[in-house]
Image 1 (cartoon, rainbow, N blue to C red):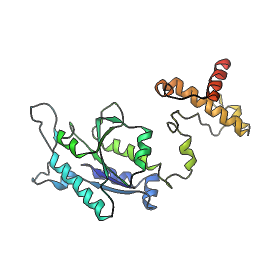
Image 2 (cartoon, one colour):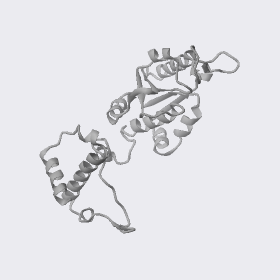
Image 3 (cartoon, rainbow, N blue to C red):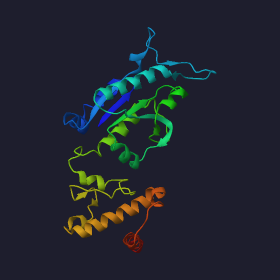
Image 4 (cartoon, one colour):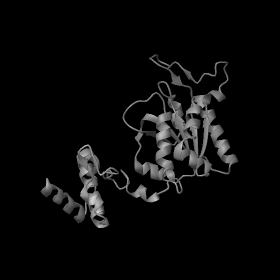
Length: 247
């Protein structure tokens, strides 16, 4: 999959692509990265990518032309590689909040272009040049690069060959609308806290049942908004009733 990133700090993306599973996936040909700076498409001696807002106000606004020219350069690069134009996504606090369902949807694409704003944001006319606007949460960052890297990780780990154990994707948080069950490893006892006996029993059915119950309880306690959307079956209801009897 091709990730094209429009950013005034391409070195951040270059460094990200050289670390951990992302780097291994680049070496394996699963991922490809292109990071282009709008500064390369400016015409003034200062390579300006921002200016003061019309109407006054604090901060600076990213100019539309360098961003547009950078996106178009990415399009030409994709075409030269025999690919169609990548979906253009602007990372912005004004966007729709990113979810695991979005990660699955975007992972099916051959390419993705991520546009990273800075300063007070981008000129409003840039919005007409993108296909989607995405936020990673209701908070503000200095720029879109951290959000872009988070999105890249969420999407790329769903690609075939990215993870050594693909089965883990089916069990982790948000995969099925639930938070993930608790995990334990050695030692069996740590500072007065013991590993639940069921996990040491060797009874795989009992372990699976315990994990499902814990996922339900954790989601209900920590993310009632997610829990309210669940379609509980008879087994789930029985597990919750059992937990209440044990309390």
